[in-house]
Image 1 (cartoon, rainbow, N blue to C red):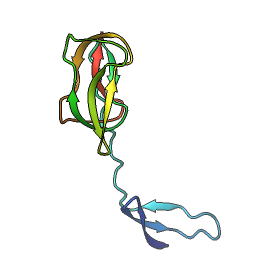
Image 2 (image 1 turned 90 degrees about the vertical axis):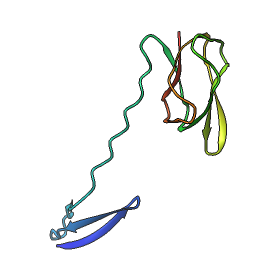
Image 3 (image 1 turned 60 degrees about the vertical axis):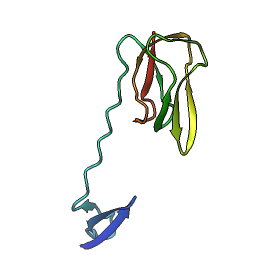
Image 4 (image 1 turned 180 degrees about the vertical axis):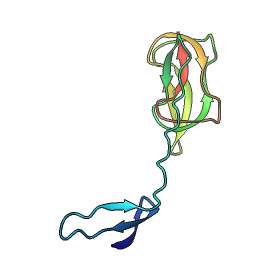
Length: 117
């Protein structure tokens, strides 16, 4: 048996390799850290059609309020990602049913920003 320390994506793993007379050697990690759990995805309130964040970033501004009428192409929020401000626009006509984010909040890709009725 031989012991090795293998680094994957910055995390060091202590592994033991058993020699098996020319056959492939099984690798058994001694203390591999548990894989991180995925963050739960925020759900849009029932009854509304969500407009989602196209990328991960920080909400710089919310341009609408509940009850506002929007049309296809209306900017509903501004998201900062990679030091650039990106407009999040409505892809349909509707009335803002709810706002799912706050100014300064970090959002993940696909997170609902506003919902429309």
